[in-house]
Length: 417
Image (cartoon, rainbow, N blue to C red; front, side):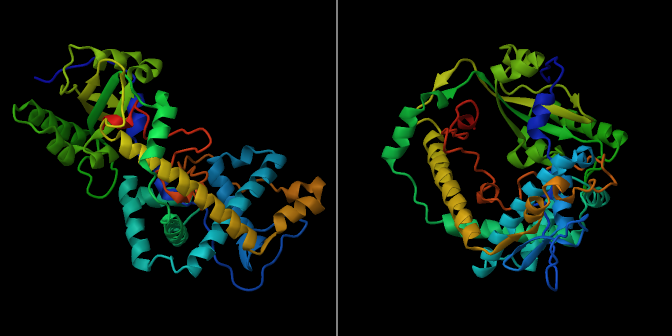
């Protein structure tokens, strides 16, 4: 018999499992190649093909700048004041300049991916987006991109990642004394909070991509009925059913959607905390189907921690996670330093910035932001995913050296898996 939990507002779980369509715009600041001599921005209204800056002679156009502004503003760029628009253009231009500097370094180091590698990454992103071919194309169009631009994007992103990996490969693992010093100096990070670890099977009625077996409500209901029938069987294997039925990115983690402290659950959705923290709901129990934002979730309670626990370096994965975090800190610092040095060595001409200095009352000729599809929800707000050194060091580096925020060692979540 399937254990039941009566609760509403399970959106907190969805936010931790729903795939962000920003995969379409990863490294979304497109750098299109221009031929011929650069044409600096004049003092009038800049045109799309006019040059905003050059990096060692390579032009960055106003079209690229405005495309990046549009992506960062999530379709709200037309609401920016002239001053805000001018500031946004200058900011994204600095990011595009750094991206171009690092890409040129990657070219010199022979770290540019092959066409086959670019195609493989593009196909991976299409698959992971969960979108049909038509929807994927629609999202690209709304983001002001085509497949050529996206391939250019991927090329630059992979090249810079390859470069950073080479640069940071010299980092050595921390010594035991360093790991122990960090552990002793940050006791608050090593507390395993009372809470639960959950897994889920997700049935999505929408046509979410090639190979999707549920494309409408009827097919979803039939598939859900089939799933529940198998879950009722005494020898049912939840993990196997995740692989067979789930239509969510959590499928690739065995259905795991994460660990949630009771405090996290209570703050946003007390009904959820009450259900899963109730001792009457057994560990290993499976919920009835729960509709959430158009999808249907069937949750399994993987683990429940009844009280806070202090972790030691010998607790599962704690030493490993502290080691990784310390290494990531050093890699981040090294990559930032390398990027600063590369910027210093490059010959950069920022015509847009010069225009602001020369014509302070014109706000860099701040024409209205480009119109068309301003309100489209592109879900492509990859604000800093181009090649600033932080974003491209490693997608898993979330550690800030200044405040020792070692996310992976935080016993609220990671050490439990």
